[in-house]
Image 1 (cartoon, rainbow, N blue to C red):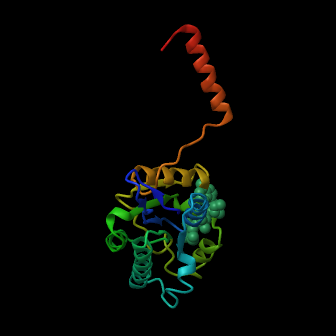
Image 2: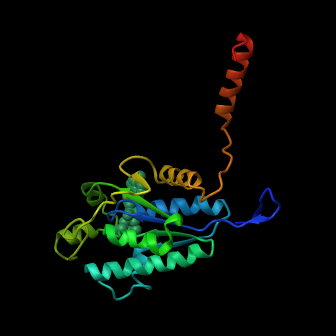
Image 3: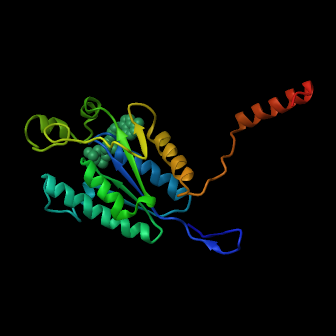
Length: 216
Ligand SMILES: Nc1ncnc2c1ncn2[C@@H]1O[C@H](COP(=O)(O)OP(=O)(O)OP(=O)(O)O)[C@@H](O)[C@H]1O
Ligand SMILES: [Mg+2]
């Protein structure tokens, strides 16, 4: 992001942070991550996406789905995210990350002030119905052992920073909710929201009405 001058005249560096999206497979982590990237890119930021699927073909190639291997995968992602954040970048991690204790470890690895845990929440039945990659069907047929939600546990976060319930709303609406949270936390500068022509007209109508009645 181009550095903007602060009131003191010195350029203020953008803040780095990590958005950690956890949830069942099919809950919407990657979909929302991409919606967020579109918004953040428009704001001039560079985003590093660490998506579970991709990470497992490179950084964590060869790891399986035992608790130990899952934890190793998640810690590696947190390490990379921490490096990105340290250099004022944005890391979005879209990973099932089923264990509470390991997610909290990630918060410490990245640094609590710059870590935002987002619970992408959808019931198992809905995720299974969506089944965008056909993985649930294969897991039910016994072709994929240790599948989270089927025969491996998912521990919902007890204290997430944000919950996005994807049984409603659009991915873009969830991305906007996340941006507002980041602005409130001071991790993103607030941007002025332009009112739409419709609401400008409504505002103008209200101003005219109040002028007519003298009501202040
Ligand atoms: N409100 C919503 N937000 C996000 N995704 C939604 C929503 N409503 C429906 N969907 C659909 O749910 C599916 C979510 O798939 P996605 O790949 O994003 O899940 P995921 O959490 O990344 O899963 P995995 O852990 O397997 O990578 C997509 O097909 C998406 O279109
Ligand atoms: Mg995904």
